[in-house]
Amino acid sequence: MIKFNKVFMAYPKGSLALKDASFHIKKSEFIFLTGHSGAGKSTVLRLIYAEHQPTSGEVRVSGYHTTGISSRETSKLRRRLGIVFQDFRLLVDRTTEENVAFALEVTGTRRGVIGPKVMRVLTQVGLAGKARSYPGQLSGGEQQRVAIARALVNDPFVLIADEPTGNLDQRAARGVFQLLQDINTNGTAVVLATHNLDLVRRANYRNIELQDGEIVFDSGNDTREDMDE
Image (tube, rainbow, N blue to C red):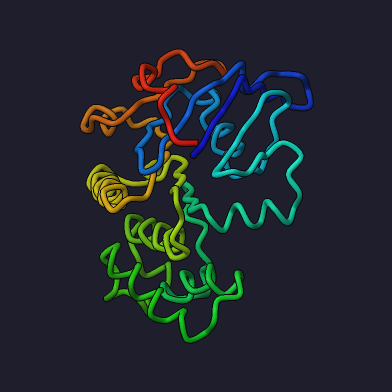
């Protein structure tokens, strides 16, 4: 489903953000990306959703080769991905349901379909009762749940989360993590970049650890060759 093959990523000043990274991610797998700040976690995620293209090597995401990918193909790929960030990125002048609906509107979804899909995902993340609330009326944990609902509304095959609990207190972080586990149980792959090693210790999921752009540990390494493309 997601494949990195000998991937290097150099930034304009010449520093290597990723060095010879190779791994596969299977359909419906839950993956932790761990490592200190600057280790390369966010670079891996940006390569998956084609914000960056590798300097060398190959990145394949659900049949798309991201090297040389066109803007049109990038848009098609991103419609199949759900992306969640640490800082929520909600539209402050729109309600919960409007923030989630926006993700459907920009893809040209028929108006009659939008309402039911929005309420389905808001129910899934436990926010059906906050549909008409604005971001400023929600707690940090609730705002992140809105962001997750927005990421889920297009039925992605993988949810990419970049430090989604980084701005949350411990209780809210546990709640968001439980939600991500539930989403994965329902069949969506999750790739979670995190500094929160407590989350990693609490769950028996595959952990890919990066250090200075290199993969130094992969708990699923023994199964890497037996994976779906």
